[in-house]
Amino acid sequence: MRKLITEFIGTFFLVLVIGMVVTTGKGDFAPVAIGSVLMCMIFAGAHISGAHYNPAVTLAVLLRGRISIKEGIPYMIVQIIGAAAAAYVVKFLSPDKIPLVASEMTSDLKSVIAEGLGTFALAYVVLNVATAKSTTGNMFYGLSIGFTVLSMAYAFGGISGGAFNPAVAVGISIMHLALWSDYWIYFIGCFGGAAIAALVFRINNPLDK
Image (cartoon, rainbow, N blue to C red; front, side, top):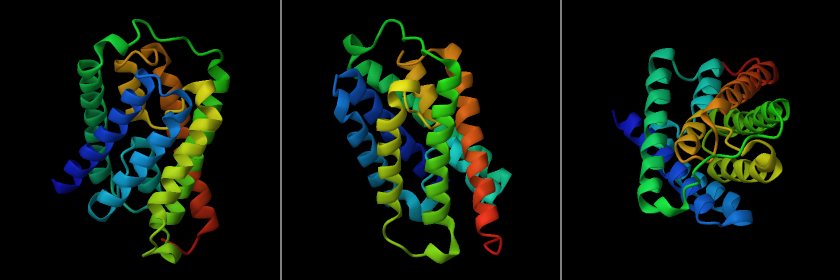
């Protein structure tokens, strides 16, 4: 239970910060706040749950072999619940800042590629700094993961919104920052990028079972 509580808290605050900084017009500084809160929540919760806060990361860790399906599915469910709860808190705190209708993506193909690349980078970093035997006990994993999200958000945010996280995609859809009809883009892009990252990790680390 404590692992699920930790996953809920981390995902909740990640989506809460995303919602507050985006809807209140922080603009170019939004990725800094988002990457920073993710870094802090990882340092706070990694020793308990592994600090995934992202169903795509959970999938990558599952395919890498560090958690089981029995453990991974509850992680994903709680992450989505945490994201949805945060979205409704943002709507309560800043109701006048919530868009009435989300903007459409300019290109479905470009958006899928952007989400896939961003999530691949995130999952690739997570697997190598937080699950590999050769980096066990390091103190930089939270910083590395947070800065990866920050960098990918700057790189791809203008194309797909830069979710790199199916739970975040639920949250931004509830807050009308993305269209529900575009959710498939995040689903395919995020889970696809994470699965490829897990495959690459297993190829590059054949002895790290």
